[in-house]
Image (cartoon, rainbow, N blue to C red; front, side, top):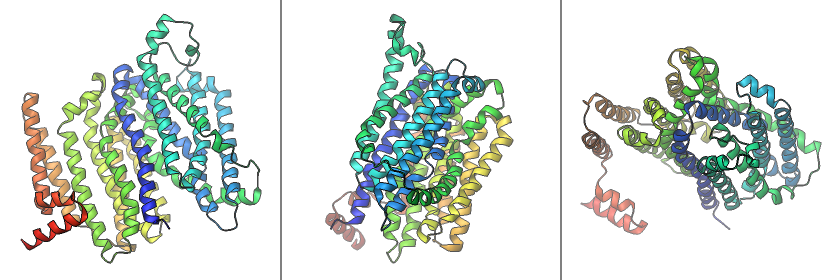
Length: 509
């Protein structure tokens, strides 16, 4: 019989591949967008993406998780579970899509996008396909078909990327030579935000086509005895998930209404998104850590000293996060070249967003208490508190400080969520985190960053040399803190037996 933990770890790695790949490719599209699109157009793309992200949570109705719950129950036909879930999401999303098509013109006019009615239709079609296929992907996960899941997800990612490259780099010249081309019914002759939205729409079509065989395996027969309890279980999960997604994307939506300069909110939103993308390096590390850490935490709960182990994981996590923080901020002059010249003003929010992601990662660690203790109902209230902080900070400060307020709102929100998790965790599931050490680590990292900002202006090569010395100093302090030696690092990468032998030699020396 296969080891269930080994299977979990293997599936986690494969599922993580498609997620991380999507974020990496999306990151590397930023130089393309910020060099070809105007700040206003990139801001419009950002607004559309925010609406799509929120609506995906609403339109799937929490049925992905509901399927896992009910398909695993004894005496329930899993075919009926997935079929009823698919029909529900499809019909609900199809209704939304029909409304988007019917009201595309007035909606585009109301949003200030007259002449871009097609984009409303693309958004409706994308949501219809992505939300419906989410149930098919849930079935693949339930059946442990991780490789098929990842391959189709990767095909979607590469289709979107390829479409972007073709549309932005090849089609404008082709359209100039062929002004009657049929594609001009779908996108404009010159690059703008419609290229990005249409590329996403195309990738959703390809993904749906690849899943057609799986869709037709479903038994399209409504069963009220399955559908009603499935929906009653799933809808609260959708409601519980909304604060989390709104916490991440609310600032993009509020920019239209609360920006300090109503005439430039789209351009400011584009600059803000570009600055956030620079901080995605930290976000990528946290995402990879989560894929590895979550099963690790559950598996190690059986160990005698598991709480001490969790505390040590937090130490290493924060130390490495501050290393990434310094790595990005100290070399921001080089990394910032990824952005188009007009967007580099947004680099000012990168340090804030980097620290926000550090706190978010720490919150993931400290929030494990309610997952390990089974008190997951607290997650809703913690996330809701974070959402209210995000809303309050943006409503109060965005009219004055624009996207800088949005960045600080993320840091404030994640900090409040972490504070609540720590307080409740100490009450219900105390873990002996080394808070003095963690605070010192963060303070040292911020001290080196602060030192870099007060240095006098100098040539780039000298500046990079000094900043490299600051980064090396942080690594030196980190290694001293943890008593890390080159012998320990070397033994870490050796095979298990050799590493153990080397460790014995170190301890005996």
